[in-house]
Amino acid sequence: MSPSVLVTGANRGIGHALVEEALARGAARVYACTRQPLSHPDGRVTNLVFDLTDGAQIRAAAATVESLDILINNAGVARYDDLGDPAAITEHLAVNLFGTYTVTQALLPQLTRSRGAIVNVLSTGALAAIPVIPAYSISKAAAFSLSQSWRALLAGRGVRVHAVMTGPTDTDMSRGLDIPKASPQSVARAIFNGVEAGAEEIFPDPMSVALEPDWTGGAVKAMERQNAGLVAGQPVAS
Image 1 (cartoon, rainbow, N blue to C red):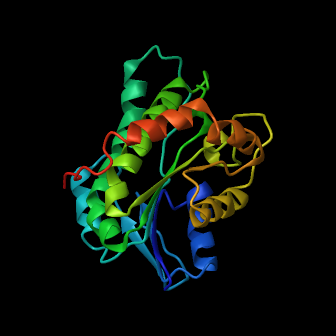
Image 2: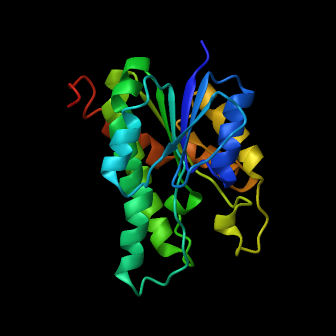
Image 3: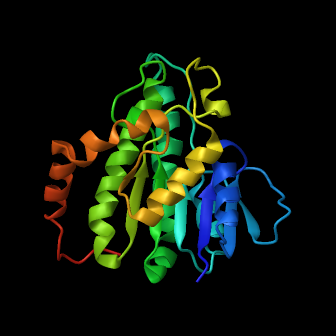
């Protein structure tokens, strides 16, 4: 059966590439979520318009999604700061953490019915802070912890949770970084490959993939699995 996929931040960069990759892989329906209306020539694409910081808009959009197999929380914000203004942290958490949380909670009934997958597009900055964008790094670290928690809590419902540890990618968000970058298209392909392979953490580019062997077999991953045992067999609150 062809899956249905929802992608936030679908208007550009990795989000746009994820929409195109889902279509190329035969998705029956792709929900492309943006803040402003978006048109797409493929009839399988449905545009959902909402602001990630507006819970009412998110819940209204989610109510129009009849079924869903894969949710990709891709939308995010990244701004340069020096931690001098706490508003920068608030802004990043509002989008990168609470936006991800609210979208997922709103769509969890559909994902539970399909025994689907949640894919959170994060960053290697979740593992090692990028000090020129520290508020971003803080928010992605928090979203990674959220992903690990959901992974344990939702396993009993058959919902899988994948965390994507992107390195530098050639998007508007990283335009100011003068370093080698992967293409959004190659990252999108790697994300879907990782979901199909059942990888809990997905390292989708040449820089991040170097971290994969040590991470997968490392002590932190082992501790995550050990901690997950604390909720094994317990009912998950609705």
